[in-house]
Figure: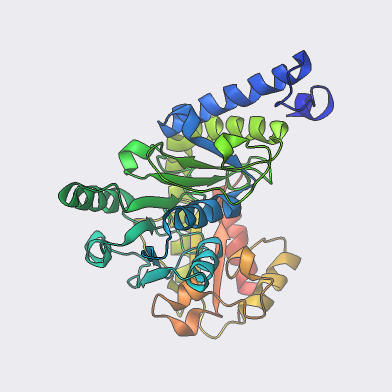
Length: 363
């Protein structure tokens, strides 16, 4: 990224030679990403991150399909990220209709429930690939198949299928054809990439409207001068994630399972939140009965352990309890759960340090 931050910093939309160097860098980055996503390069739309990508996907489809004689209907789940749920609240304020599917005790929905909720005015189904708090992996391929079958049966291109895949890139395939999705959101910060950059993959057949207006960059869907250093960094991070996916998934799954087993054994009254098997390799989320999780996070930080108790995007809210854990039917755990996220530097010894720190904090 450094080259494009300090030396070659021209506007890639200009026509002089310095600008063309940057334009070429953006083009190459788009092609690299498209290869990993298994999509056309023109279907990759760069954004400022996952939140903007989700906003563009949902509001863009809503604005493209609303009219005085048609009320767009959307389907989602009650455990989505705030950048999905808050947008749907706005869509409802603008006159749209939203069905919120309830997940089971493991945080999963079934493709049958999705199919049963589709109506003739359904324009979009949005289900996150893997949950950011509890790590449960949704059956995206199955959902994509029932949506495709419904469209073929009814001879229509709707509803589109969108997935927020920000948490999934490091460990799960993001091949849009295999997943059967029409729109897919990614975020650089979740994959060791730059902050402030992401993308929305938009299949060519999707009818979508922009919500940022200006110079018409990114096929007119996202106006604004391209952030060349961040785009180059995002492409590198995605390629890196793709090359390390299998080895890191295997390694971290073993550490994750060791961590879950160690914590549950050390604290007999604790329980696991989310799916045990169909779970992200880097996610441990545990409910500790009657624990003040906010105080525990601060206490663990003093001991050198970085943890969280809900989505980071919720900590600015007055009520920062975990609605995700609460919607699993575990209301008493919404304020008493801790999430530990593993990564490329995590080793088995770190789990042992974590358990010892927990013993100091939790009496």
